[in-house]
Length: 295
Image (tube, rainbow, N blue to C red; front, top):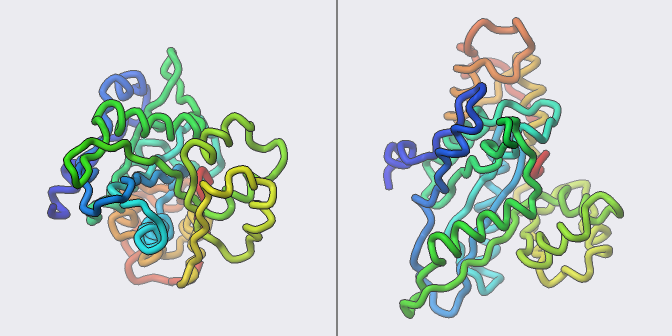
């Protein structure tokens, strides 16, 4: 599929204001790049889901999928048939969180060249009866993907022609599993769903002691896969926002389509810093700015 065609099939996010109820009513699960048939006999089809703020999405977010895909191909009995970015709801109310429709659109721009990555706006259009954005727990998000892929679509066709249930798994940075190991931070029922029912592929990060976190998650160790970064990448959305607030270039730290979108909409700049866009971003100062999920 060409990049242009892929861009045309990306999900449309909700309008900026007052239309979450309409957006939720019009929501359609994106499956254009979901591979419906397996290529490898004897393997279990797997769909990776990364939940996060993506404010903005960075190259590390995208590299996480590629690192996981390589690890899975060589070290597991799974076959990756699709990957999804699921931007968190505006109801998360995190500092630096751009509006949901902007984050969905930036993710769509970032993954347009990919043959297997998609963005699902489900979390960003989730709302209460009054149309107010509603936070969606990670466990609920994974159940959503399970329902859409295995119940609505009917699963993935195996090499023998039979329909097989796709395994849904969370893809996250090491900081997430670190937080899961902290007593009282996550509800045990949610951990049972996320790690017990579905499982997680975790990308190691420098400065994190994953073994320490796993010590308190021993009951789920068979469902947690740790992936080492061969080439360390510590780009984070937080650092990108800081660069933009300082009027520094972020080109080559995030995909070009995301840079263009940020410039076009004046995102992440201090009020009054720029009237519109960042015309000199392509050639101005560069620097070197870590990825997390729902962070």
